Length: 500
Ligand code: BES
Ligand code: MN
Ligand code: ZN
Image 1 (tube, rainbow, N blue to C red):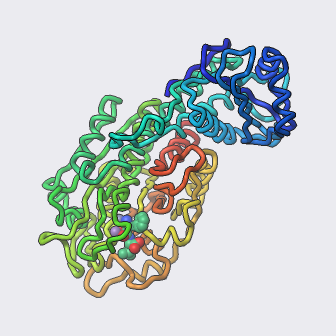
Image 2 (tube, rainbow, N blue to C red; image 1 turned 135 degrees about the vertical axis):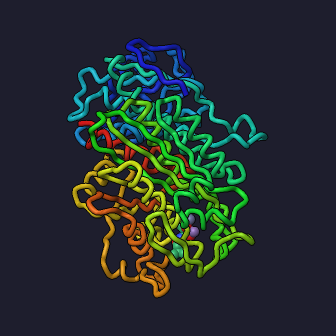
Image 3 (cartoon, rainbow, N blue to C red; image 1 turned 180 degrees about the horizontal axis):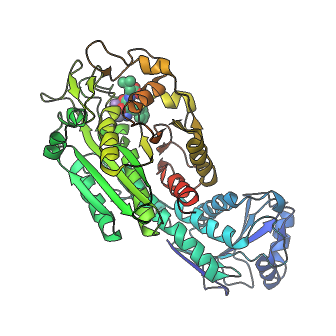
């Protein structure tokens, strides 16, 4: 979708005006009302349109204006508006316009006179554009027979604002992050016969190398040589070999500290020999959402030339049952030297991550490390689809991540760590086992397994995103489907905590 900013109106299909609660039109709306001989005010009265936040009123074929429709968008009480609300409004407008089959629209957002407390109208307009863009995402590459009437019609949004240069500048930063969100949604939505470790690694290289990111791909032989026995074990049942990809971006000084982001990239999780039940198994194509988010985050950081030293590491494997698959009972040696008894081959995320975490720490010596993983079904039982779970060994670090999530609408909820759950993975046969054997605190057990691979002094956060990686219904800025949860959150976290 094309988005532009100007002071003067452009020639468009539809005209979008804004009104505050009680149906008070902002300046461009007043102008349009005059042009139509008062038709807008009459429509507002006739429909008893209150202009509450998010309410819309459509006036078709207004006389005196060249537009197919005038759409009046309610802002509610100005003093209650938050910047985040504008993102939602942007998305609302897109769906109304598509519903009316408009191909273009003028977004007349000039606030002259009307006071919108605490809100910079330039930020509001940029945020509205971001919301419009994010809500317009679709994964339709395989819909070869979709009738034209079902395709979205909206191709462009032309904002009229007071300070277009500034709004454009603000939006151009957001747009880079939105581009990364689109990439992540494409990756997560992609079919598992098309996206597998090798093809995933190729896409990472193609997307990130041109932005100056140093992409390094380890293949099965390298993984074996490095001693990553747990990652190997998960990958060995598949005809498609595992990969480990690092993405090194140096936007700060040589001596500045490094932050690492590590992602779970199981391109398909059958459960392996501990095979999952058939119904719903297709959902496990998105068991690589953590790795996709890390990829997207690195793309966003590099594209906007963030002043940070950041490294992404993703472990990519396909968890399949076969004659070469690992078995329950197998004992493997991880890159850290610690041994693991694999008692359930479906608890594979922690196995690939433990080697990726260790590799990231040995290779890049980060002070902070965040891992993202669709790790446990248990986190969905605990937090549903409203929050990602965060397990963290440092309260300030946890707070900073949670705060960043709030501003972008990707919310995290802190979960506890406890020595009792660490003990629960002791094994009589190896240094640890990959499950506790019970049903208690399933997400925390997974977190404690990972914690055993965090080196002394490293600040670490584990985000269990199993409940939020895929939206089962349309949400603010997130159409049903792959959400790209984590990209905007971590981009914000970096902007607020590493670039200032
Ligand atoms: N990928 C799954 C977790 C998952 C479940 C993600 C549902 C999204 C939706 C993970 O690999 C898994 O299978 N976890 C097991 C762990 C168990 C065997 C300890 C689970 O949650 O059942
Ligand atoms: Mn699994
Ligand atoms: Zn999994």
